[in-house]
Image (cartoon, rainbow, N blue to C red; front, top):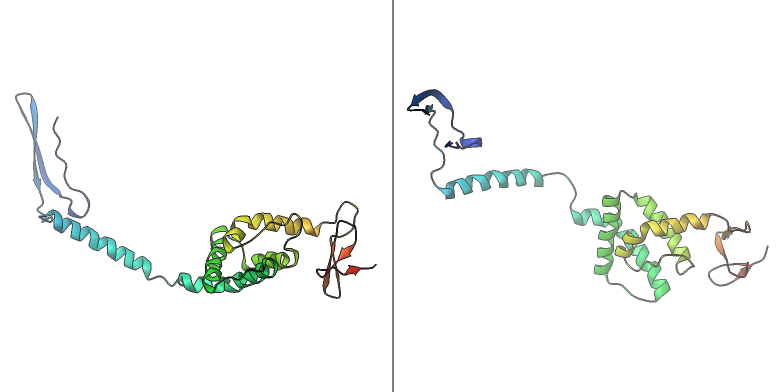
Length: 196
């Protein structure tokens, strides 16, 4: 059986009248169609299709969402804090361009993974005090912060819990942090021992 396909969509033809005839065992159908003028060349079809596509793209672009650069600017202070923390530990300098790339990675961490700005800030504050410590993930860029954020946050939670002896890992005295060392004494970053 042979079938004729009619165009659909914008240039669909409308059937006005249809008649069926049976001649020598075969069925013939006579259709009267409403006349439309579809584009005559493939070029016209291509131009019309692309015109409607580009109009749709233009409508999407006219949203009031801030640009990528503006959104990255919000996370620049966190990237600068991370760079400052790493520089103090590793004695290494970073360019402004690298720090801008880090802010892009931190923005992705926030937007794609749904992590609040304050939560990232809290983890970076903790990392600043505990960089280089035992069981603290090594963060060397914005990308590694994004990849190891959960591990870093787990380290923050572990640090809040007291050790097996019931002695707190960190004591804050006069706004100075004293960390529990392997010898069982609390020392600050400079190495000064806190005497109870």
